[in-house]
Image (cartoon, rainbow, N blue to C red):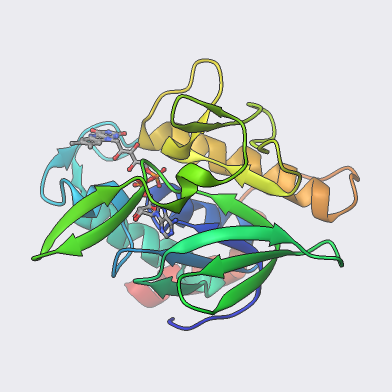
Length: 226
Ligand SMILES: Cc1cc2nc3c(=O)[nH]c(=O)nc-3n(C[C@H](O)[C@H](O)[C@H](O)COP(=O)(O)OP(=O)(O)OC[C@H]3O[C@@H](n4cnc5c(N)ncnc54)[C@H](O)[C@@H]3O)c2cc1C
């Protein structure tokens, strides 16, 4: 799942909230590419507390960061996301055709219809085997903030730049909680806003995973695990 590829949605960050977004966006047929400065997925859960049990993920009385990340990767596999690990996003810019160009360290870039900032508290880098957090280039991106977080509306999760969304620890709105479960909720609402935007503002129908048109694909993937 490595390599650069243009996608409907480029997610900056591959923490738990970005991973669950791939599932939500995938339900509606949207393809995702994720970029993370770390060499693997999982964000803070992997970088800061991989072995600590987390007790407030619904349905799991206790789950550690390694297992949560592995389960999320399994859950999103049917949607075939692509990843760029060990790469830092330096910025993004609007293109004439309405797409967004996401600039990576070095000369490479990606093109997307929508960009989702799931940058958490900042970019992690490995130094002598230890993950250390740096504010990273996101500090200079021209978006309104509250404190260190991108200001969003709690209905759409769109930032002050059209087509650029922020979720998880990277975003702020009244009542925001920096919790994984809040990020999962934000991923679901962001997905609906992205769908509306890409569909030109039209009405959208909610998909239940029990009866969605992709249910067969999901059941096939789940059966393959057994
Ligand atoms: C010690 C500790 C214990 C915690 N315990 C709990 C708990 O019990 N329950 C709970 O719900 N929450 C807990 N949290 C909070 C939880 O970890 C976060 O809410 C969650 O990780 C946020 O997920 P995220 O995907 O938004 O961001 P993150 O997990 O921070 O992931 C963001 C990713 O984006 C990458 N990134 C950032 N900028 C760039 C860039 N420019 N280019 C490329 N990559 C970039 C980073 O490297 C990182 O991997 C805890 C946090 C800590 C520190």
